[in-house]
Amino acid sequence: MRSRRTVVTGAIAASLAIATAAGTQVAAGEAPSSGDGQTISVMIAASGPAETAAVEAAVAAWEAESGNTVELIPAEDINLQLGQALAGGDPPDVFYVNADKFQEYASGGSLAAVGDQLTDPDDFYPALTSVFTYEDELYCAPKDFSTLGLIINTDMWEEAGLTDEDIPTTWEELADVAATLTTDDHVGLASGATRDRVGALFVSGGGYFVSEDQSEVTADTPENLATLEYIQGMLDAGSYNFTENMDMGWGGEAFGRGVTAMTIEGNWIRGAMTNDFPDINYTVAELPEGPGGKGSMAFTQCWGVAAASEHQEVGVDFVNFMTAVEQQVSLANAFGVMPSRASAANAFLADNPDFAPFLAAAEYARGQVSLPAFTAVLTEFDQQLLAMSNGDADPADILADLQANGEDALGG
Image 1 (cartoon, helix red, strand yellow):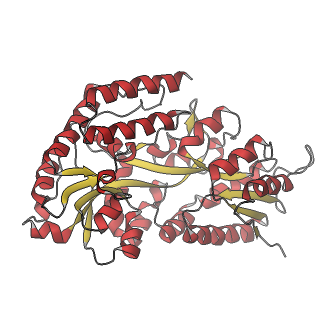
Image 2: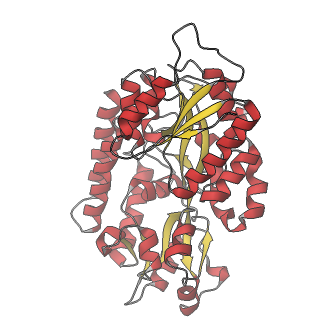
Image 3: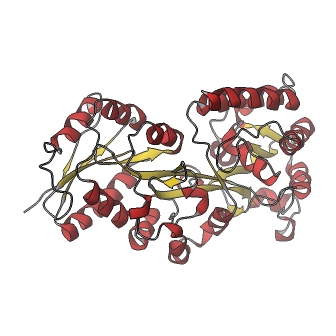
């Protein structure tokens, strides 16, 4: 009888990741490429116990179906642990890939380009596959995703005399209701001073940080300037604030503690509201349209297969199982993400009707920038946003710096 072993994490996890992965390899030429009876190592970066348990249950189902075995490695710091394993030449056979590390791994030859071996790859949302495409090849399967929506405190909404008819659908309406909702006790709208929130407004403003194929930096544009000026107008009016200025860790905390009537956050907020702020009544709407239409951001990871793996066919079979509609819906229900396959939408919404605004954003959201070295560029942008809110930075200068820094990173 086969059994699956979950590898322990902690201070020794990085070395164990390499050792475990190495232990699943067979000398070159001796490892079978398909069939049952193989053992693959799989490294994940779980968001919490719920995700780990859900993956373990799915792994057990695949083992029973395939006759193969999984050694599961729940990483505490997957970028560190996976990076060390890849550098050591004996990575896990299958692993989560964060969007900001994808191009580094793909360009460095660490990832097998298995997109053409995936079941119905066109069923994945384009906003997700675009993140994991390198030199026109899809390398790995988006495992799930999250988007951003407008979270509204319904009690504060009613106290301000607003109704469902007032839920904003345009930037002008958003600015108006933010002003209406602002009182001495709370601001109308708050979010983090970060590219992962302001980026959504860039999209609806008709711009973004990079082009669709990420081949060029598109930061310093009239569209992005108009977006930052729109944000600055609300900041100056006092109807919008960044959570960093409010001593709040993120938008969900500011919203839950009642210091803002609205926030821009992702579908993960449901868990926080249920667990930490169960007395807050709220609703979710799509982000309002800007001059460029609707906009949001999509946050995702993919299932990668190691180029060095001698079990690639089995690894792909495992990935196809984990991204099948039934498994995607089960996993999404378990820990609050959304299925990356469009064909899973109806089944998922039947269980999670409140996620409809988030799922709708899959059609127009932009994925995270996955260019190497761009994380540092965007971290500097975040700091500039905060400076702008305090009157210490000008939108035009911020975008000029972002463009220059981005081009340096892209050229490097």
